Amino acid sequence: MTTPAASPRSALLTGQLDMIWALFEHHAERIGDEDCLWEPVAGAWSVRPDGAGRWVADFAETEPDPVPTLTIGWLSWHIGYWWTITLRHCFGGEVPAREEIVWPGSAEASAGWLRGLRDEWRTELSALSDADLDGTGRTDGHPLFGGATLTLAEVAAWVNFELAKNVSEIGITAHLRKALS
Image (cartoon, rainbow, N blue to C red; front, side, top):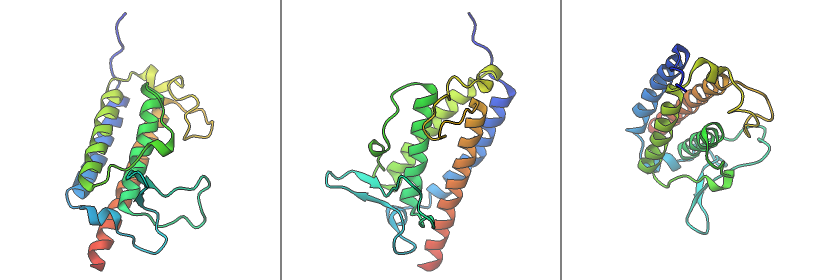
């Protein structure tokens, strides 16, 4: 049996991912450890070492209103969190609990972690056929979508959108830190 060829739709999604990723790299090369942990306001959500030295993210099961201001460290953890969950759920492997997904502890390690997730996602995405993208078998029961039935194309589009949003928030926070320093 032959594997169906990747579709122009998967090429569109990977091309979009590549454009968004270029913005990530633009910001990542300018961000240091202190930038990641800078709290723009009191009460900002961040990543903090626990008793075992693991960097855990501030989190609430129900999102607070108003939504807290976020640090770059938290935002980069959040990208790694939803990408890890999505990769494991859609392409195999054990889906870890949120508490098991920790921030790597530095700007450089965080960027490396996210690059690895991006490479893994891009490899999987580039091989998808139209039938794969239109299917729901890989996405059924995705823990981040509250039981909604989404096609793999819809999940891939969400990944691109969520990444663009989070990378933009990282950039805004980095610019704000530099402006206030």
